[in-house]
Image (cartoon, rainbow, N blue to C red; front, side, top):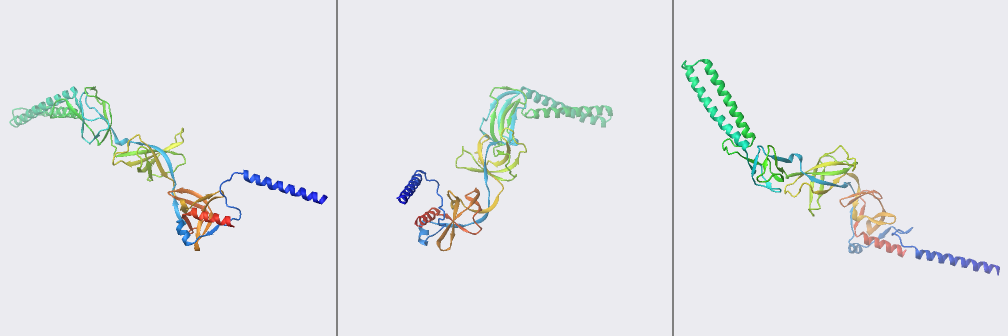
Length: 377
């Protein structure tokens, strides 16, 4: 009886352990897929099954992975592309031909100013012109009289000096009229303000009928045929001048633009721990406006590595893996260690060798076949 009791007790304990393990298995939620220990890593598929599943392969190759960092930035006008247009002479604004946002050509008239200061300078020029003509005639007469011995050499020299003084006074009067923006032939006291460059009117600071002093601001003209993209990069970013940068603008969906790095700042902003990268952009169609926000993709120095298409990468609890294709329709699951990704390619640091072939499309069906063989084992 003692032996029978011990056997019954052992069976009861065994039943209890089995029951607990079964309950624990039911209560434990399923985790990410993992390859069972000792599970097969290779599956064979017939040519018909491979075709039906749409399985395609590609070789593992050595290539350069170029990772791009997304950097924020803004569009700005180049400093040498912005021109302030001021009055030359004090006066009253008689007319304004353009407003903010208008496009203008180089030399195109922007405004008309009527100036008393200019009118006085033009009148002084006319007086100087008459005096110069009179002094020239007097000198010509004196030279004739001197040749005839009527006047002395001293008198002739005095007339020569007077003629030179009148000529200098005329040149000064002419230069003053030009500096005030007036005409030497049309002495109306009107000066026309013209644009020194082709561009867009960015600001207008005067109105019709307004009285202005010398060098008062009228317009700001910006040459928008070229702009600058100013990016803010983290301190560890390294970008060489001449690097091509692609950028997009939220306000212009579906479009991307190209810029060339021209310079980088040597100073890191203490608040943001970033430094500035300035890029030049050709703005042929004028859609890029100063003040727009951009997101630029700035490439890092390239990394040489074995690469496969991103579509070849599969995942499970044990980590990423690929299916390596072998002869005879056999596919081997191979765990890999991945590096950086860019432009649809991913670097493989461990797990593959050059010239091996991996599945790039249809890997899901290969995986399904492998799981079926695991269940049938």
